[in-house]
Length: 66
Image (tube, rainbow, N blue to C red; front, side, top):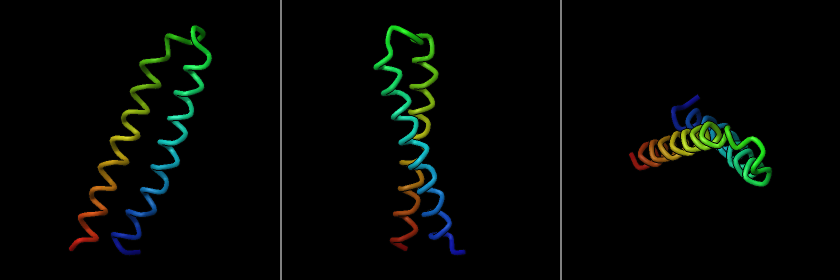
């Protein structure tokens, strides 16, 4: 499997994870004030998921331009 294909596969998985985290954060917001203690944890996990996804997309773009 080429580097580009492997990276595309990883991005697909990361995108699914980021979307799930986004929905978890959304669901949490709808349940407030219940579970308010988990806001920072869920928000941080969502942030990390999207940051990783953005970094991998940039890496893919760089590979495709070579």
